[in-house]
Length: 346
Ligand code: CP3
Image (tube, rainbow, N blue to C red; front, side, top):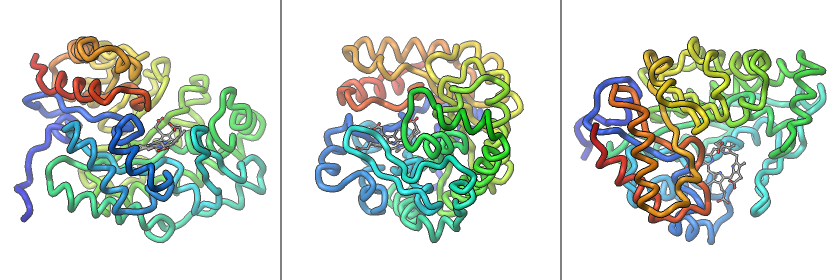
């Protein structure tokens, strides 16, 4: 039986319509802090989990059942679409991703392929369809992709990095090659998000985890401009587009002309100010410090109320953390957080 097309506070807030209470979801809400996730991971490795729609579906639903968050996010990883481009992705236990070959030379970049997501990553679209069926209208499903610059960073570095030596050298020494790489990623990311929307994603988030390592003008040229090209190519059909930028407080002035519906911000950015300025045209999502979840449940709730008060009662606000929930977070604190946000009234 299908439910009536319910009004979802999350989608209402994305569209800056009034809601009876502030909706929330948590970046990385299905993750290692959750004993029930660990149980599944004890049996299969992370990439197998991402590539098996039944398992990805089960894990996607965990935070809906256990925490009662207001949106589901597809369980996958931003690095998944790099494999069909020709880059092998592995996760060394506890060490983060390893990409091979690292993409640094003209030859490396020219060898990258674009692909039809329904053929290159069919399990992602299958998971989207399966999750929608299981959710049966209970909460909306968010699809996602990495932003072109963030993906290029992982590709050039071959994994995570502290100095971002390789990607920055490429931008500074060979901007022509950087443009070639980023253009290829624009195509891949736009096709990938369009395929998720076609399969049933009801919102999409573009994760720009590393945009904030660049000086303003470089950010505009190599990170923001590709994101604008991606958004221009989306077949949105009313699906809200969320742009999450980590460490982007100093880049706020660039956001005004970005055609996203929702802007995700981290804890370093003043949410009161952001709501008064950018919030006039976009919904704002964020921005509690994930480390605040390491305190006792009472402090977690007080911190959440601080963020809610700073964000204020005007329509167009979605509660979230400023970055992903950390693996060391006590589960009871995640529960306390959701209760605090759900019981808060202006
Ligand atoms: O939000 C969700 O619950 C959906 C699933 C999701 C994951 N990764 C699962 C994951 C999403 C949306 C991501 C996005 C992602 N992946 C980003 C952007 C967001 C951010 O955090 O900045 C980035 C940069 C990645 C790349 C990535 N994936 C890294 C660097 C790592 C290793 C570091 C770490 O935290 O372990 C991952 C692994 C990963 N992705 C895990 C999960 C649950 C842990 C894997 C495991 O179970 O061992």
